[in-house]
Image 1 (cartoon, rainbow, N blue to C red):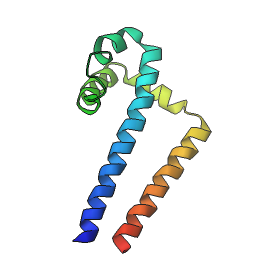
Image 2: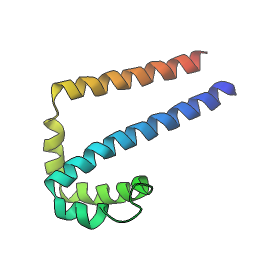
Image 3: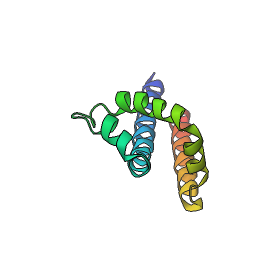
Length: 102
């Protein structure tokens, strides 16, 4: 029972960390690539607390409109950033395995 609780907390932290790091990068790219859209949908009062709900809805609509641009942008990630993301993911996988094992 304890390991299930710890695993749930770990997964919640992983999702929280991933969402905010992904959205921070997404929002900075969005602000640079489409300032009008950013002003209209992302600069509302109370935006940071509603980042997950508003970000999911806003980024979903934005991605459906400009998915090709976003895919090209993802392909243009630097090799260093890709390695860092992979290392971070592997660290989380090892942490999950250790918690389950303990």
